[in-house]
Image (cartoon, rainbow, N blue to C red; front, side, top):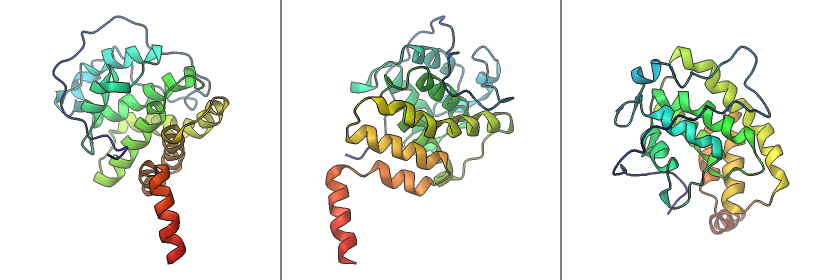
Length: 203
């Protein structure tokens, strides 16, 4: 099984909870670029894999606590399932990425690999599928991606396993516009990397 996220539809959604959006940021969005307000009616106009994205703000609010993504736990299962579904991304995906990065920035030393992996995978899919970013989301999306290399440095205070390392490297590559490198790095388990090194020496 690869690290690429090819989730299927979950059986249901979690009810919306009234939690304040993430506001803390170690490395903030570039000056003048703002995330789409979670209370904005614009979310209902955006799309995800199953229709209107009005349910996405409730999921993003829950990221404030840096929940785990292990074992298909919520809200991450629904975030992946709706916004990066089998290689497809949607207008709501680009509005969500800044919130994922903002959650990461609130505690980069505690966040799991998913907080790097998700933004990287969204951008890989965007470039692979040629998906256009809505004009009103463009600036905040790319400003969020630009934060990832600095956040990688901030996350270096704790040990990285192979999955975390691959996710961070992919995020840096995506932030610098190297989507193919990002996608390749996502596949580099230690076993695959060893085979690649053997293959490269034989060329």
